Length: 342
Ligand SMILES: [Zn+2]
Ligand SMILES: [Zn+2]
Image 1 (cartoon, rainbow, N blue to C red):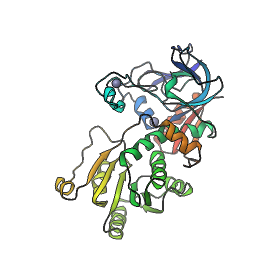
Image 2: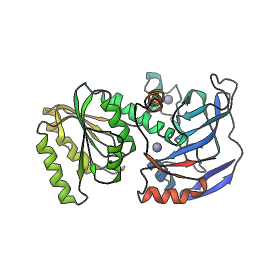
Image 3: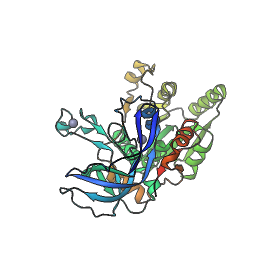
Image 4: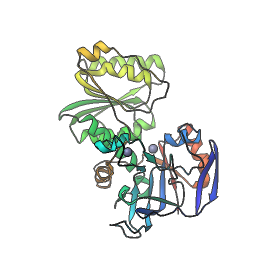
């Protein structure tokens, strides 16, 4: 099979490889589409503790091509999506049902081979069937599962007023999930431009606040937003990954409200927050990272058209076009890309 393989950081080739070995509990997937996200840029640069050689790709969609003896419930040809995580089941955290923190967590496409190849294997209990989504849109099930985990962590009360900073793919799915699960007024605040246009086309919010790109003008708009909402919001989600934005965001949380740390931040980032404010105003600061067991929920929402994703993946590439895909991701000319196979 053909695969995109990194021999070391920044060094990749399209190689001919043997089909991956199918363990007794594995499903072999003939890959149709593989989502590309920011993580893949970090892998490219070798910033993810990567184990080379590596076939990246952690948002894998395809059809069942074969499976091991222990696998049940699949037929060759089933359309499926794979959860890229493998959990050990016996470490300190797994034994408490906190598998997200598994000490021996293995991620396909990050630590072992993933879906930037014509075929990939995953344990049968991490493979899920879907019906209606296109192969390309189905690559969003992985980030949607992360958003569903975020919803669990936030646990919004009905009637909540929510402010979300950022209009990226996961944020747009989280906004829709929140609106269907307790948020009665959703405000998305982000720079004006095509991500914000996409948010509007998906009907992801009740109100859209566009920040000008220029810093001074953006600060003025931020002040206006605060003046318009003197009591703040029950839930404020920082989904831009900007540390400064997080420092700003806490000032929009109502007393007793929740501040959700939901971006991918730099390892060296630090923020300055007032402990007295968190103490006296009883602000709950919470994080949400990755997911476990949320693929069924993500499939129900996306495959059931309860959450709209049309247009989020706005460019596809062939395996041979990986460099062009990297460039498009870097210069932000795509919202979300996918590698597609025949
Ligand atoms: Zn990803
Ligand atoms: Zn474990």
